[in-house]
Length: 111
Image (cartoon, rainbow, N blue to C red; front, side):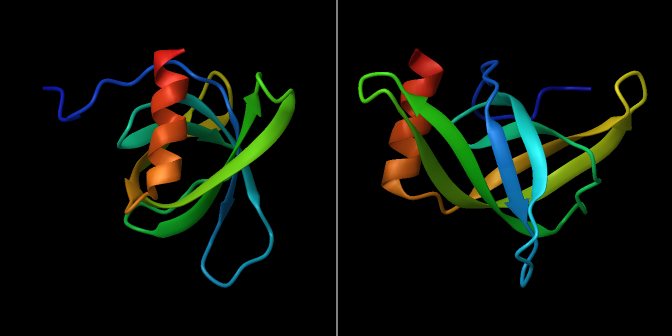
């Protein structure tokens, strides 16, 4: 299988909250890798391929010594069960991320 990603992913572990349209109940997750265009995420609940979700990532701002939250919409490209850890690994693509979101993700990748 050939690599279809346009941007290489970097291992970065961030807490994530994912929201389906109209829902206030988060689906908890954690990134395992990120790029400027998408991410790999582990969740306890399967995300539906082809669906859009709102994603909030928790990042730690070292210079300010505090947590920050960045948000964007995502498209789920694929999601499958990883048996040895009993979680779902989902590949997502950012949907029209803001300049602030892209800048903060870019900074995490370069760190």
